Each structure stands twice: as structure tokens, then as C-alpha cells.
Length: 304
Ligand code: GLU
Image 1 (tube, rainbow, N blue to C red):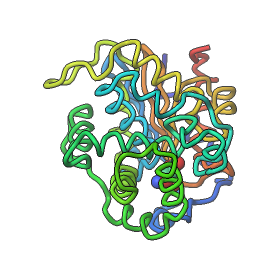
Image 2 (image 1 turned 30 degrees about the vertical axis):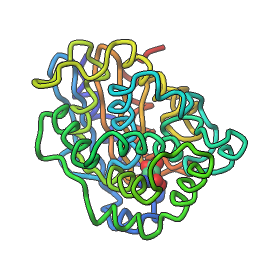
Image 3 (image 1 turned 60 degrees about the vertical axis):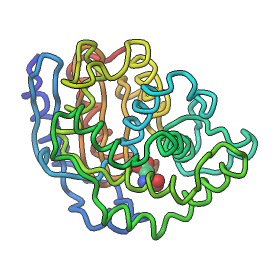
């Protein structure tokens, strides 16, 4: 498959089009990013790499970090975690409080903010320094010490994070949070501030595509059944209330973040990261969605 040629052609055609999205301004620091940045990087399980554009520029991965915290929690507690968070698409915005009331504080899935906060609570209970442990976990998977949090972004979100503060306190009121909301939120905002390039992101997520992936010290990250379930959750819940649309148009498991990044996985083949900060109305990268739709169409392959 001439991946590089296909990536280059799609990229060139998309940059001719109007970049119709809007930056996420509710986290003030995210609005300072170059809104026309656009990068793509793909890593195959056969160790080939393809890409174009701003693929070596760091950006805030935001909610994409939630997949990695879920993997860490799943590795430690196994299926116990499903007692505290569900596996159903919410069909609601990522920062909604509405369902929590009727669901008695059990978030619908681990990728909406409520679910990610419960997963953060599990990690805060387990580790004396969850920020350090989580960062080292990712550095090991990515095989790079050059991955870091951005304290300015974390601080910027903390100052205006009223909704997440409300969600966290609401869950606490139902007894589904063991630690103090302050501690959990501090870890959550820091986790979301993680920065990566498209190249790093696609390499980090390769373990969900490659059954033979092993790290030098910890071996396998998840067993095959666990990796299957994480991919299934990305497929059904990875794009806020646009998850069905992403499945319909792209046909791969994936996860987006409000920093404009998207990661998509083709099990047994590759992982591909796209970054373009302007978001569509549902909060997903406008160009990222366009690119991946055209990519699976032109490569004539998806998991379906
Ligand atoms: N830190 C962001 C928030 O909680 C993450 C949202 C996202 O990327 O979906 O609002």
C-alpha cells in the first residue's frame, strides 16, 4: 500500500479547503496555539513510519490521555474497574452532568470526563505519586523520556475548570470517589496536559494494534482480551457524542482530544495520529476527522 503517497495527497487536498472549525477557548492556553497547524504520522506494526506536516510539533493531547490512564488502571485492577464505570456510549457531551444523577454517580464510560475522573481516583488510591507513575508508564510504552506534562496548560484549565470540579464533587456525593476531589482533579488536569507530537502519539498507541508489543521492563501492557476491550471502547465512545459518526465515516477505533489531536488504531496493522487544533461543533478536530475519513476511504480498508 503506498501509504506515504496517499497521506501526502489527502493532506494537500485538505489544506486547499477552508479550515472550518474553531479552537477550544474554554481552556485559555489552548487558544494560543497556531490554529493552522496540521500534522499526520502513521506507525505500522512492521516498524514503518509515514507522515507529513507538523508531525514533530508537541501539542496538548487532552482527552487522548484518558485511554492511557484507563489502560494503566485496567492492568492493575482488571475487570474490577467496571464496577465503578460503565462501558456504554453516553450520547451526551463529554462534560455533561445530566446522566450522573439518574445513574447514581456511575459514569457511562471511562472517556467522558466523569468516567476519566473515576479512573483518576483509582490511580490516586494506588500510587503515592500518580503523576510521576503515570508519566513513567507512558515514557516506557513510548520508549522516550522526552514526554512531559505542560504545567501552564494544567494550571490554565484548573483556574476555569468549574464543570469538572462540579462533576467530581457530584460523583463524590454518590460515594464513587474515594479520595478528595481536589487531589483527583489535580491529577486529572495534569494528566490532560500531557504533550506529544503526532509521531510520539502514534508510537505510543501501537501497543493496541500489535499483539507482539512488549516493553523492555514490563513486557506486555494488556492481554489480548483487555486490548480488544479498550479498542471496543474507543470504537463506541472515543468521540464524545460523535462516536457513531466517526465509526460510520472512518471505521476504526480511535480517540480525540480538545487539543485537536486524534489517534486511530487499525488492529494488526497500524496506528495513525492527526493533529489540527480547530474543532467541529462536537469538539473533534475538523481537519482530523476529514483526513481520517479520506484515508480509510482511499486505502480501502477499515475494520468493517
Ligand atoms: N481537559 C479537558 C476537559 O476536561 C479534556 C477534554 C477533552 O479533550 O475532551 O475538559
